[in-house]
Length: 260
Length: 260
DNA sequence: GAGTGGATTTCGCAT
DNA sequence: ATGCGAAGTCCACTC
Image (cartoon, rainbow over all chains, first blue to last red):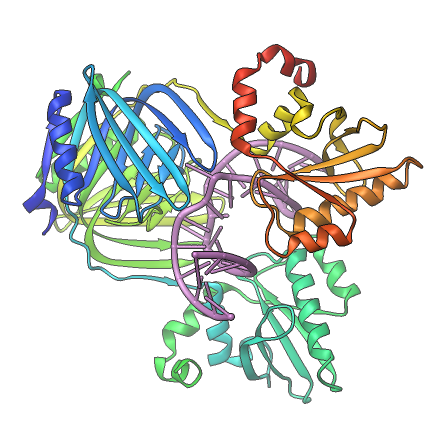
């Protein structure tokens, strides 16, 4: 079913009309979109109260609920989807929509006293979403084209579990030294350096060979350079976008060698 | 201006009608809501591609842009508000909406080939939003009613800057010993314990009096109890909701003593 | 302007 | 189920 086959739109409706549409939307798992004057109360992990004003309520097919004000990327109140049950009732000419879930226990209650628009529909959406140049993609890119790190680098393993956590990649350089690679897709902070240092310690316990630690990132935070030097670690600049290019150009065959 | 005075709703419109409404919305900083079939491309901190499908596009008054699919709390593509410029154009019967910002440099492009609904309006929303029982509220609650921590506790200072960072509260107990209080509004992890331990060390350097450290939280993570005991720290269970009750019941006068 | 830490974070993946 | 880490995290606050 697509929007066209399922679309209902009400403009300046009575509360009772909205109530009917909302009930139908919840019972058939349709998307519900209400623009109107309301108050919102949340109780659960915290507790919040939103005084009267006009907002947008969006309830999605999985029960995700979002209340948006006129500004801001984030919803002022919300409920993530999954295991959410809804209740609709009208009292004193007001429409109350209540969403409850139990893990964690919390509820959002929206009470409308005036609705300007209400619509309900089903979205037909099979389109694939792909994201490039995540941290994982940077790792893949280095595995496919190790020269991105340095000439002669040979990956031996990746996401290898060692004592404190994970090493993004480790391998050896052209001189046979161990190389531990920690990848960050954005400006590396102190945290990344300490993480790498921990990896280094853990790995040094298991080998007598010389071990190099390389922090790979598009850039590093200001004070971090000093920490790197103090800990005898190295930094390699690498742009995530460059990695994305490598991946889109390379055939997926090569990746299969590693990720099959 | 409220929704009623500014509302335009189009159902099954032509692309050209949507184009006009979108242009008007952007030029007058109105909210724009489009439901239709589209593809979305993002480029900036990463890069993403969303194949054709029906989605909801919401552009808010501050330029925040959200593209929602049929499920999921989070938008599949987005742009936070502030310094975002928009461009609308129609080509080959398709409507392209493009949002660009420069810090960081990124852009989202949505191309609709079919629009089922499009609306534009201004929200009148002056309602205040208040969130209770945050970490700060727990702190306030203890300051207002120190018995929440333990009988006879007297707060001396709060958010006091000491060596490693901030102490949430410190004061003295009924026996005149120093008490350092670290507050977490949810399950306390090891991190909180180490933070408290650092505070303790810093404070012990400055006094010869006995110093107690108390971690206040609704609960503590599994392994953390052992760490607490090993470091000779204490744990006090305190429910954020209880704190919220204390705050709502207490007059704001008492808070003013601390927060004026 | 950059860095730091919290969030009703959400989400996914591993154990 | 639970825990841990990443995120195009966003956001508020400090330096």
